[in-house]
Length: 231
Picture 1 (cartoon, rainbow, N blue to C red):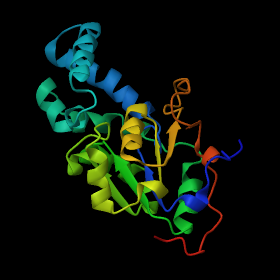
Picture 2 (cartoon, rainbow, N blue to C red):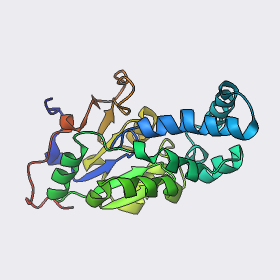
Picture 3 (tube, one colour):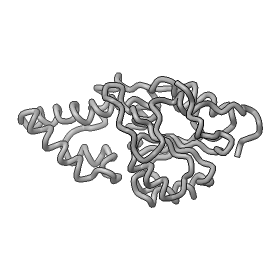
Picture 4 (cartoon, one colour):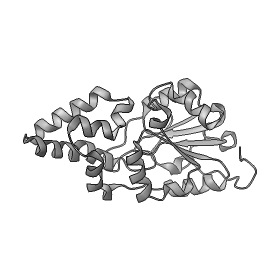
């Protein structure tokens, strides 16, 4: 798979990366939210799994795109379940996407900071960092729960820029969510790439508004390691 020639690493000084669906296979989250949680809800309330799934998915939709959607404590209270404990039951499904680690290694070697920017709740984030090596390459980890807005909300991005002090014109953001990329684009982040294949067990998403990649090989690798590009 050839690198995207439209992505010029010479103009990139900071790299922002999403976690779920971007660095990590979304299969874990799909199974957890679509099967594990509804199954546990059905057992707790003594109802059919089909009814439980309908009720749980309807509850999800009420908060989609907000901090509450990603808040494990919120869902524990809302559904009457120990959501963090349930995640442990399927934690063996947590996996890094192919070709991600060589990309992270090359960017780290180039001296560019790599910031993980995620909507994941801190408890979910801790579970995934403990079970994968991606944390070894990260300059910092920022969650939307710290910032105060979900990444889909435009207020998130200026708040993040103040926190990390980056120039949007020389920043690369890779994310699997078009709504997140829309918000980042409105803020002015110049280099945006959408991951089209967030889950290994689902077909790739169709192309959308943003330049998309099927995997990290298409982003290419910075070839200027040690050349003084550190911001």
